[in-house]
Image (cartoon, rainbow, N blue to C red; front, side, top):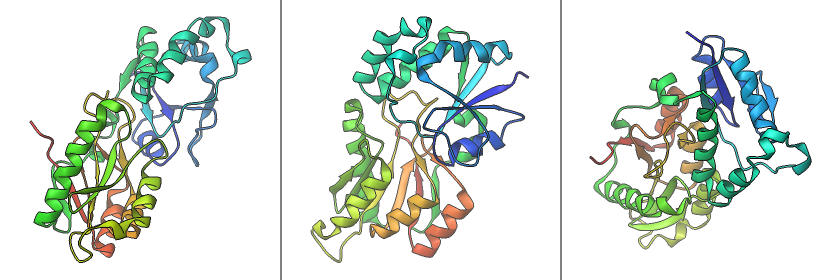
Length: 269
């Protein structure tokens, strides 16, 4: 079997994926490397020479793992071949995160590299549908359904992959700053719940409806549990098969200690 390259981003996902592979080649876009993982850095301005280097090593498969924001590009750093792709790259970046990611995938595939999904490499990171901890109430279930509908409707706008809903009202919607910022905002505005003793609210995460699931899937980890507890929520739910659960044992421990439910919700058919 050929060696697999891991394109690593920030967070704990890339180390988990690397551990699941036999002798992976690990690379990180400059400025977005995860801590504690040996890697080689590359720049987007030299994307095609980087891809050539992968092929020269006999690498035919690549998996993207971790968080990457839009990098700042240095016009003087482009090599001549990658420079010819600048209009295409810039147009994609201006069209939103989904378009930018699809363009990156297209470039890799046009150069004979196969993109693997995290689900292929680490299927255990994506739990089957079911309640993993606690027990959501009927009101929680309605809030989960409301949050799922919100993400379905906002998905085409390329905003984010999470929402906080309490008593049918959207307290926060994930945007570019990410999940932690969304939950911090929800924590600051918990008093906006109509009934102070009613349903506390839920965090729901799901990929965008038309998202390419080989890259940038939403992730839940131990820190997410702590942040949801701080926001005073009743639990965390996510679309089963579409969200990565990191460090399941620790996530369950923290959820049980905080009294939060965890629920992988079956995707609509």
